Image (tube, rainbow, N blue to C red; front, side):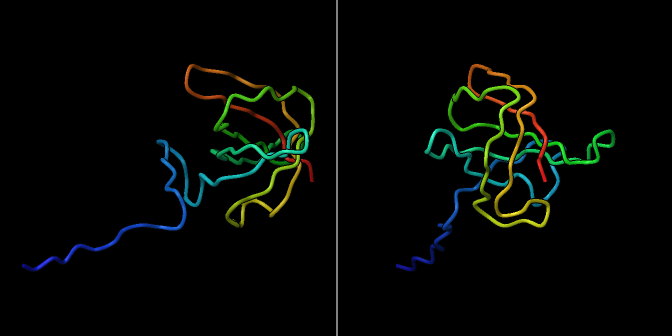
Length: 109
């Protein structure tokens, strides 16, 4: 009996890519909230032409009440050139859906 099954297990959990997302995004981040870390997925990072900074969109893995106009420290789980290892995000708005929470904000340099 020949059993040639390949192991396809990876060390990281694959992240589903949405239509229009560019590689290497999405990337997982940890958001520090009240001395604990919650998981999120960065879906988009774009240049903010008016403010000269970067706008960011993050899907939250859990429903967490993040305050608008508050700043949160984020840490990337995997390094990518679009994001530093640690950065601050100022929340502009939050949307909560049945199965997902989405946060939009600006990266503070």
